Structure formats: structure tokens, C-alpha cells
Length: 164
Image (cartoon, rainbow, N blue to C red; front, side, top):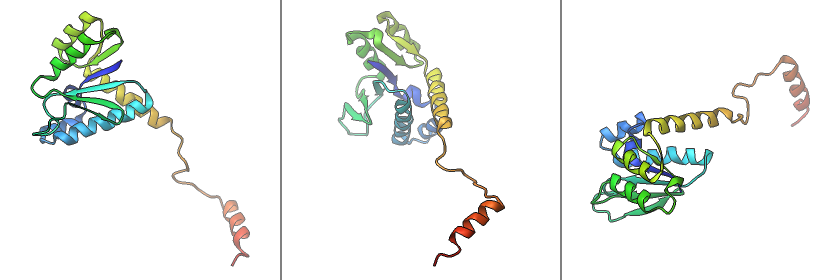
């Protein structure tokens, strides 16, 4: 099924998003994570489910939504840990799931079902490396500082000299 991500656990592995969390800007942190994951998903496609503790917003009754190709779950009265464990336990083939978390309780639970795990720190590094490599590979559309020789300038001046 792809990646099953402990959302808040991963947010704290990106310093710019961690700052939003400490400033009480929960939506900015979640949206920042979704933006990072979208860029990663464009490079390495695959199924992604993200589980967040609590509600999307205060008073909101949304339990699940699909945003940018991701399935996002909100735990409401349960913990995200509980939902992650339930997803793995109830999956027909949990070996196909990679759980992204640094929570040792979740890790010890899901490995019993032979689900793969990756620590959030390692996954954040993997994301950053993939994005940096992808950005570095792109060829610029034009030179950032083109330079012309005197010969080039003379050629273009001659070409456009007789135009109105």
C-alpha cells in the first residue's frame, strides 16, 4: 500500500515546520508537510497515507480527506498511534506497508505484522536528499548571466541596424 506516516512525528523532523508547531501554527505546519510530501511524491510516486492526532480544526468532524493524492486521517478521540496500528493490523498484506515513525511502541507493534519501518529522521533525510538531487538535475531554461562577446554584439547590431 505504500507509506503510512505518523504526521506530527515527521513534522518535527523538518526545522522550518517544527518552528510552526512551537508557534502554535498547526495548519501551516501540516500544509508545509503536505507540500514537502507532494514534491517527494512527484519524484518517487507511490501511495501515501498520513495520520494526524486530533481533529483537522477545532469543531471539525472530518475524519478523512484526500488532498493532493494523499489520504489524510485525523484521529479525533483516538491517538494517531492507535490508528496506525489498526491500519497495519487490518491490512490484507501489511508487508507492503512502510510505516514512517520514530515511536518505538508503534515500531515494535507493526513489525509483528512484518510491515516495514523507517524512522522519521531517516525518512526526512531521504526526502531532503531526493528533492535536492531532483532540483540539482534540472537544466536551467536559460543562462542566469549570459555574456556576449564584442563579436556577438557587432553581429546583432548589424542585423537590427536597418530596421525601423
